[in-house]
Structures are given as C-alpha cells and as structure tokens.
Image 1 (cartoon, rainbow, N blue to C red):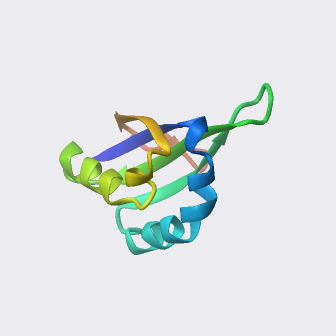
Image 2: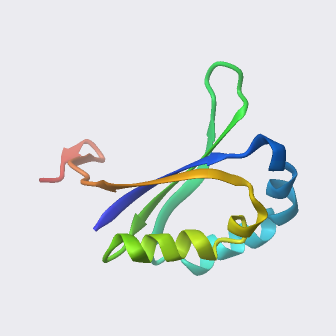
Length: 98
C-alpha cells in the first residue's frame, strides 16, 4: 500500500533541522526500500519552510508510524504534526496506472 505522509514543522524548533539533517538523510537512505520519495515543502507565498512530504510503501499504517518515529527528527520536537494518508497512484510518467 502507498502512503503520503505530510509533516508540518514547529518553527520554534527550526534549528533542529540543521543540527540533525545528516542523521535524517542517512535514515532516509537506510529506509529507501520503503520511503520512495521525501523532501521539504516550501510555502509559495513567502518561501518559508512548510514541513515535508514522504511517499511510503508499507503493508499497513503501523509500519509507516514506526518509520516516522524512528526518524532522527522525531524526538527533537521539530515535527509539529504528522498526517498519514493512503494514496492510490492513477497517473505517472504521462500514463494511466490503472
């Protein structure tokens, strides 16, 4: 199953992003079998950091939650909120997928 994970970050903990970025990127690399894509989101109005997005392949939402909580960013308080959504890909690379 595919999941979209939307992170909203805590502006008061923004320094944690820089401090833990190397660990976070290494975590993403170690979990590349499940985390298909990941990256920051930026507000189009003011170019301010707006959180992040992961696309995750996992058997269930509990596995996605375990990944989220294993991320080095998690215990720092950087993540203000997390939303996990199931996602069905119906179009990619110019073609219908179903």
